[in-house]
Image (cartoon, rainbow, N blue to C red):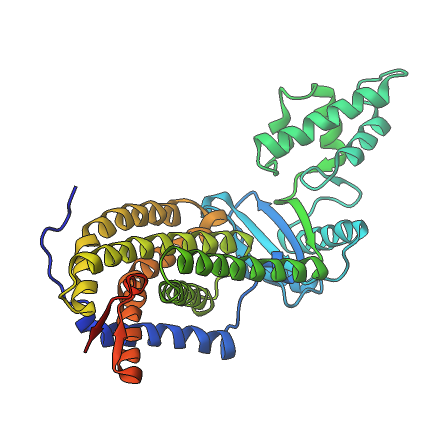
Length: 400
């Protein structure tokens, strides 16, 4: 299927426009990385404590900020998670400790601070939305509402697990009232809970810690993965075509990566492990698109020996334009849908792919291919004779 037929667009004639576009966005990204937002690393890379909090009703962001400040975390990042109707936020706390005790400490500090700003029950009562299975089991065992005998500990442990499982799986971590447990546990248990428990307006669903040493190691591995992929592609293209093809393709992919990372800095979006996965994906995607154009250039060099390299490159780009628009366009629509409807979890990943596919498709036409002509022009100025890339193995030379 051909989307375009017999196009004759002078892409190389617009190379200075392309160069200006690339320079503007590349320099803007570099300046943002160096002087403005820097590289906004997520908790995966810089370390920290992630606290996932679910609210019964839509929370006031100002109250959340005050509560976190009251807990002593003045540099915390607060981010809505998922759809607004989910009433869920992620609180990213700076690293203090990385032990198991730090998990409980961070959780307790957040719970205590949030109770102050979002309401708490009577003193001495347990919070069903923030209590553990063990604490709930001990409470029921102490109350003994079912008047059990020797197997009381086992039975109340099972009931406590049923309550917390219903809370976490059926109510996404928060109960709006104790009456929601009707039908889940016996009425005597519900009566005992009403006597000594309450449901707060929030529930801490999970607490995760990533230490600074792990974050530094992940940063190093992410950088190495990107560099190794570029080096491997350079070697492959140098062997499959010629070294100038490899250099042109790697420069184009580096250009794509720089602009994509710059876009994250300019928009102050966090770079996480999933974003690195997206960048590695777009490196492969951009390289594949570039190879398609290069392969057509190499074929046309053999067929169109009387034409200049500029004419061959222009014709090759026009011949592959229909394929480029169809494949890149469909892929772009897919990742755009993922960006718009995929939710907060996939937001960074899909944003990287949206930007990367646009820039990767552009660079195959506007960066990689013109570099072949620029190389020939450089050889012409230096030696007076330009070796046609792709024809060197036949020892074919053209005169200017």
